Amino acid sequence: MTIFVFVGALLLAMAMGIPIAFSLLASGVALMWHLDLFDPQILAQNLIGGADSFPLLAVPFFMLAGEIMNVGGLSRRIVDFALALVGHVKGGLGYVTIMAGCLLSALSGSAVADAAALTALLLPMMVRAGHDKPRAAGLIAATGVIGPVIPPSIGLVIFGVAANVSISKLFLAAIVPGLLIGGALWVTWAYLVRKEKIVPPPRKSTAEILLAGRQALWALLLPVIILVGLRMGVFTPTEAAVVAAVYALFVSAVVYREITWAKLYAIFVAAAKTSAIVMFLIAAAMVSAWLITVADLPSKVVALLQPFMDNKVLLMMAIMVLVMLVGTAMDMTPTILILTPVLMPVVNAAGIDPVYFGVMFIINNSIGLVTPPVGTVLNVVAGVGKMSMDDVTRGVVPFMLAQFAIMFAMVLFPWLVTGPAKFFYTP
Image 1 (tube, rainbow, N blue to C red):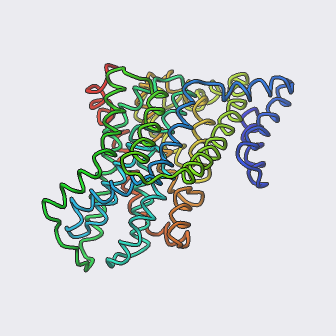
Image 2: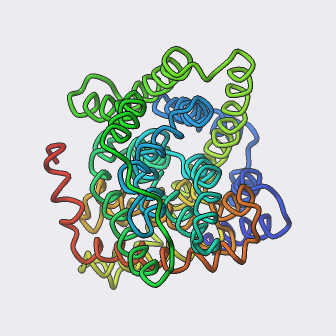
């Protein structure tokens, strides 16, 4: 009955068109009434305490870094560098998209920011080259969701805070899985583009490649600085977010000189608005998380999943399918905040590595950003590319299936995640 009250209140509020943050508060209040615990003071305390977290400071700074990179020319120079390297091969613009997406993922950690930048920069070029527009848009959308996987990742930060798991370990463990997803997109694109009659642009000269590499060098140094700093213990993930924002601002304003005072004001306003939405959502979800703990919902979920508890692979399969279903109807951040306090006790009881689970959980939620009908990245690509949602959805299907295939391969063979992670940190 407790689960029904919580889920029913949440779904009813969402069906009424209430924003997700307020829907979470409504479900929390409903659960309070059911448990005879309603107290406005407790509600306010948990709401404020939910956002009062030092690690969560990484979220607004990574948001700011992403905004600066898109406006300040870092994103464009990365695309130009990838174009110089592989733009001349058949379907080269698709490979450019994947390479640029992986590189941008190591800069901003935001799927929406990456997808918007890639759509604006590459979709017109791909259409002019003769590629099918829905397929090109689908590839860009699927590439954008690598953003929350390859560190630095806002999704991993939120999960780490909600699950009390080391964010540094999550960052380092997600590197190879993110690249594997990029590899799956590469293979899928190569298969789909083989029959297209596209005339690729001429190969760039060595001098042009070196010039593009030199111009992109400042942008390419950022992920190296962040990952090396985390691995060597120079700074925490929160401090890494500050480093990313300050470095991006320095490069954009001093080196590339593409940011003016007027643009800087607009950048800070945009980052502040996005951060406020995310932080309020986190605060509202923490109210529900506290009530989930008080109502002992995790033990009820453990009881439901008891038949799978002796087999880690089957349990992970069941959890991944559950998250897939939720991801079709809910955005990434609320899914993380709602399911993490419910699933982590199950994961701990089954003896599953929480870092491995965290990476898999974020991968699944990231792919959920392109699963209809509520695919946030699909909406972004459709809006920026001036297309219908149906066309983008049709184009993303083969790439989405490839990503799910890689995800379930990691479920069947956990060492695909845990093995490479051992090279970056000691479990």
